[in-house]
Image (cartoon, rainbow, N blue to C red; front, side, top):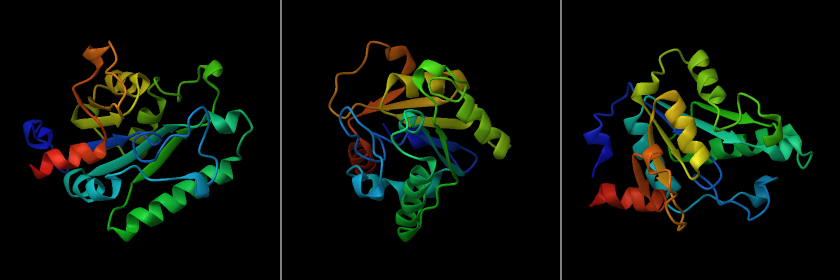
Length: 186
């Protein structure tokens, strides 16, 4: 399935991307606290130019409760975003904006996924975003719930884990962005 053509995606669409487990490797039972711990997932640099060519907006939305836990200052997260952007710019890709929730899960704030606050903030900053013409790519059920609350299409990256039972939240699933790119090349 070529979901880009099947869903009639064009430059009027927005792509929402989770960070950890989608763009970069997660640290088991921990957090990426510094750029030297950051490692792009396989396939990211191959598929990002396709995303940039296809979507009008690319937005990263990420929960970062390591800040709320006092494990990292906000400045270190912003440094990671800046270095991510520099790496993307080297391949001709600009991410339009990076949104993050620094709050603890226990705080149940509106911006922490699965709540939709970061999506609404993106739409406030970019009024041309239409959620029904958006795709959320993530690696967790909370990412899929975030997408559904906004009314986006959803794509789950399993990273080798079994597909969750909440299949009604997932429009498509792939192992990772590398597999997604290979499907385009087929």
